[in-house]
Amino acid sequence: MLNMFNTKKDFHDSNCTVAILPVGALEQHGSHLPVGTDNIFAEYFARQIAEKLEGAYLLPVIPITSSIEHREGKGTVFVKADTLALIIRDIAESLRYAGFKQLIILNWHGGNWIIKPTIRSLNRELHPFEVILLDSGLAAHRHGEIFKHTKNDLHAGEMETSLMLYLHKNYVGEIRSQTNTEFAPQAFMDYFDVTQITEDGYWGYPEEATIEKGEKMARIFIECALEYLQEIERMKLKVKESESLL
Ligand SMILES: [Zn+2]
Image (tube, rainbow, N blue to C red):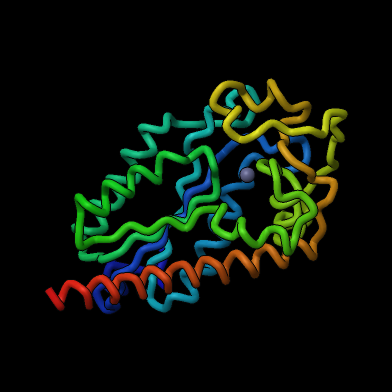
């Protein structure tokens, strides 16, 4: 694995063609988790994946992203979604220029939804350069194996608090209980600020979090991410085969 501590010579001597970009967020996560939570998770998973894909280039995390829905929680810093799209575009183009063939984005913040339409375009515009998204919801179909709550556990809830307990127990503070335990659907972030419709800024069930759940989540997420990358490779072969028959 290469990263920002390697030199120009290291890059030239390697035949590195894949770059992995962690994308996090700097935003309030209730009273019990740090504002940099999404950066910690994005970096952790990007590193795990980079280590599995020998010879990949692990880029530093993009730490300030699209968190306007958390703007009222002090400690949150955000850029506009359009700005994030431009940053992603520029990074993809500069990697392509340098001879890379693939950019894998590990995004750990739901508010960065603009990455999806951006890469859908980039994959056509920059072809044969590829941009692939590994999103924090990638293992959602398996959350039922781990968590009590799989619905509306969106932010600093059972899943994220479990992961933080597993990765950095010392970063988990006291959970301030909310009297209203019914959480709105995610789409309501389009209309309201998170701190307007939650009591402590979290959206989900952190009181159900455990280290064991966090360990299982980390393992399953990495499994699902690697499977997803393999699935794409298989589909590429299939497409190539069917095109060669034409
Ligand atoms: Zn988060």
